[in-house]
Length: 436
Image (cartoon, rainbow, N blue to C red; front, side):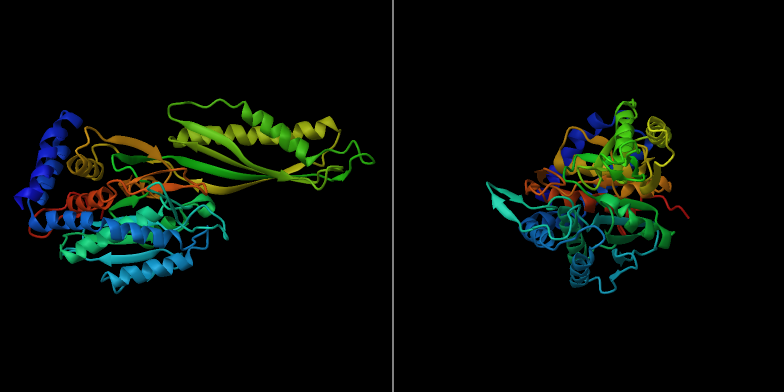
């Protein structure tokens, strides 16, 4: 066991003080708990088992990738994940009404309750070729990193935990969620937190890099704008207002908006469609708009300005032609709340400590992003998103790629973080506060 323990303790001594200085009370306690856990033979054996499972986990990742999971159609992949949960010993695993696959691993006291999740869905529409191809050591396929890797890491973690018969103090709820991507609008985790009021902490495995910890949820509002008018022949009916012209006026106004760089606040007109033919005055035109910010206040400011500009564009198009026929229907199609978990939170400190110990990284990067963790953060529940391990790129494209470089560090990080937070029976007490 000394051979297994030495690199973990060496890394702890070299990096913790340099990364978090001065060490406050929470960090000191997390440090002590982590060191105690790494002196336990079952924990070190479980960490080594995850590393030894790396090749099998990659095969699992490829298998998951090749099961299509387009938006709102995750059921086939969900059925596979359910079967895998049950094969790993979670006989009571189930699929809830929204489509989330859930397995509960009871601890000795039932508190605290920690959720560890990865999302099933991809951004790619039904019919997309999801066959995995290998090229120069990389694996290429839509969704292979986002989030097939997260699901594979989740399964590897569950396997190691049961194989080593590790008993936690608190409960662990493993979740393969739905609706994280695109217009899914976090419907999976919204249902999860609606139906489970006793969750004390939340970890999402999404993305790859393990030294990047997402502790800030980037909020977003998405709108569909539908401009409507009378329509008509481009020559015979010339003089009628045009839905596409109104839309164009709106886009021109939106493009001139100024937003702060800190907190980062962004906008884009993502899609545009409309019109009937080249020689017709458009009766209808549509656009979809995405607005994001790390601040709820700034997001709402941007939203108010943008909506005013859209209505101004309608007024101007009608005025241009002396009409009142152009209207706009404004639909909110996406609402992701913003949130922030302080760096001195036990959950954030536990995940950062695990990273420095396992990877010997000189520092951890705290970041903001839009993930399933947004919902927990908005409810005041401590949450982070951590990487599943490996390297990759071209996210949300059909040539997304993945390389399994030190991929095992993803589930290792999740395991160690989880044990610090939930406690290990007879070894450590939970660091995650109970909310109720």
